[in-house]
Length: 142
Image (cartoon, rainbow, N blue to C red; front, side, top):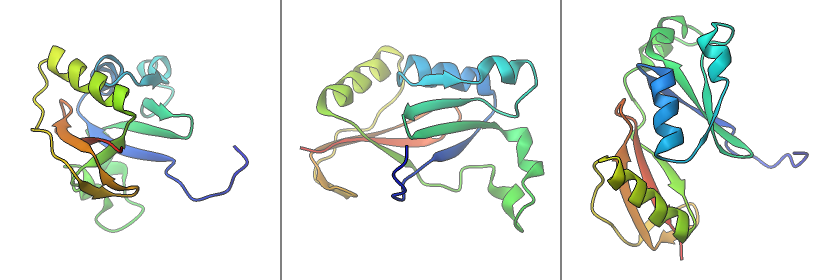
């Protein structure tokens, strides 16, 4: 990618078991796991899952929190200080995600409508959480 427009690169999610978390994101959200073999071999600190060609979620083990000393208080960030991460999906992917969550018996919120976001008002949205308590919103714009 040669475009230097500002955009998200990655979001770090604290998880208890990175391999299990990667399995959830692959099986339920359909995301591609990255660096699982290397993580299992101990050659990288965490695996990731790919959201799209430009963005990944890093699945950081909670045990890494003690190493987060680059800023005062950074080590205390383990424990979900972020309210939620929002995934904007095309209509068919939105419906497929909701179906997969139901198949895996992952609780989801009721559908909401006309929530404001980066692209204006979203036609539909709902919330769910991963097994580690990270909360996600899935939305679909008209």
